[in-house]
Amino acid sequence: MPVPPPPSTWSAQRSRSSSPGKPSDAQYRVGHLRSANIFVDHDIPMEISRCLQIHIFPQVVDDTQLLQRVSDKLWTKAKDLVRKPSGEAEWTEALFTAIDELRPAGLEIVRNRDWREDLKPPVYNPRTTIPRKRNQSHRPLEEGVTPDSLHGSPHPLQATEKTVPLFKLKDPRPDICVGLSDDSLWNALEPKKDRTVARNFLFDLQNTSSLISDPHVIPLGLRFPFLIIEAKSAATGGNLYQAQNQAAVGGSTAIRILKSLSAIGSSEQEAEDNGMSAELPHFEPHMVFSVTTEGPIHELWLHFQMPQEDDFSMVCIGAWRTTLRDGSMDLVSHISAVLRWGHSQLKDGIVSILVDL
Image (cartoon, rainbow, N blue to C red; front, side, top):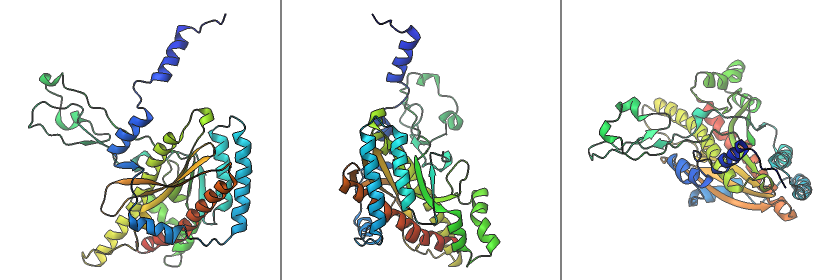
């Protein structure tokens, strides 16, 4: 007869399974993400759909041999991993190898590093308590601001008021992150700025908090991330829904970095034009991508924010299974297109703003 575990073990098992203080994945999406204006599976506007078709995913592919080679490696590796209870680390490594081989020179790739928490979208929370009196203010509070710090202690008569949960976003820590390298931006800025100025330009902006372009807690030389990967494995209890929630925050944070750059560029242009507002070259810098995985299943997502709007939208572009040869090729082709776009059009748009600062 098996020996039952001690009471402490039962208690630990119950706490892990129930976790009354931790929101479920569904609660996190409909509560926490929504309170930050992050919406998953949103509709894609026609102008962005057209931009994808024309500028990012054209039918003509330059290096089909490279794509076929990378695709075959990923396909072979996926078939091997799926036969075993492979975890997130193994699936992440397979995709990292593919991206690393596809990425053009001038792009930086980083694995599993914490991002700064102050870059996340603000979360709007209701008051800790809902007052009974109609003349009480219902203004929402941003994450990190407590009602007592603004209004003092609640009145004793309000002791029975209903408590409203505090919403908070988890700090991004993508399994894989791709962005522009320091060297590529230095070389692009050098013709317009002095060599020393170009080399220190982004460092100075980051150190003075004027523009945070490297999102990592410890800067790693990766600027303006535009592709993140969140990997899960059903064999170890992970799923796509969890990966999507994580990618939603990381993608929105990457958009905020690009939006901050656009805001600085717009302010500089307005000052030069004596207050006349000028259009930025294109709102493509307010678009980034992510890949979410559950074992061999891979989804490609677009994250975007329309001009003059607060919503962060996340839409699925496609889904593929890498144990299928055609599925692996389609995924690799789309990732390659995103990398080329980041290295060319996105980088050009970023540099066009930086040179005028």
